[in-house]
Length: 256
Image 1 (cartoon, rainbow, N blue to C red):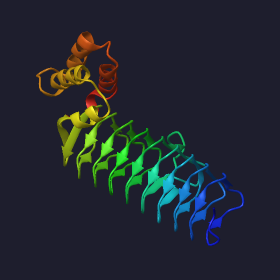
Image 2 (image 1 turned 30 degrees about the vertical axis):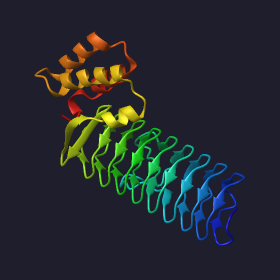
Image 3 (image 1 turned 90 degrees about the horizontal axis):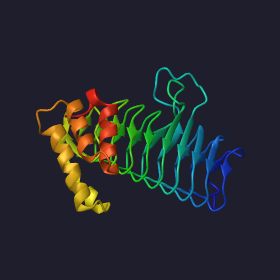
Image 4 (image 1 turned 45 degrees about the vertical axis):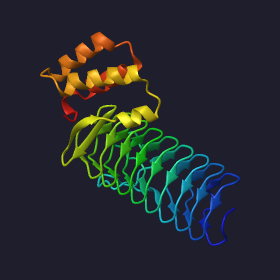
């Protein structure tokens, strides 16, 4: 399963059924789960744990030192879950001790060509980053979020679940769940309704989300007052609880 032209350190932990293509380099601190396929010319280093059934395409760089001037060689980690697809020339870096020391990626994500995940990012599951989308350090990307091609996210931002950023968006503030943003700088442009329907949100759930969105983005209420009203009227519903919790956490730093 390992091409004779690959360079795999004897200290690396490679499970049975792992495919490693020619000219790839696997460092001593790397662990790779069963069923994962590593293409040619891939470099995986550092303390990097990769789960099962992932696909990593040619010329990707995984688990390299963070691009942070404060980094001084400390032991930090990268953790990648299961069934992720990491396409050509993608770069994913380890964490820093200034944060939790770990960059973490969940399951079933797609990182298209030239995407970049910086140090200390926390990425959920079912996320899509289209070609050349890039995350600054310490970004949180929640489940089912989608970043269009060439979208850029500033460090420390949070992108909520089921949100959508259009191609070329420049994001410097938090994006609440379900919200669609676009522009330079990015602004709220509506709801990711098509994404919600594809993920089996019912008509009543979508109607409640629409009403909550209007109170935040189309009324004269302050965000804190809109959130209080949303919680009072629909706070028992899980989809609204997610929206409210996000807005309470980043009331002054959310995209408008």
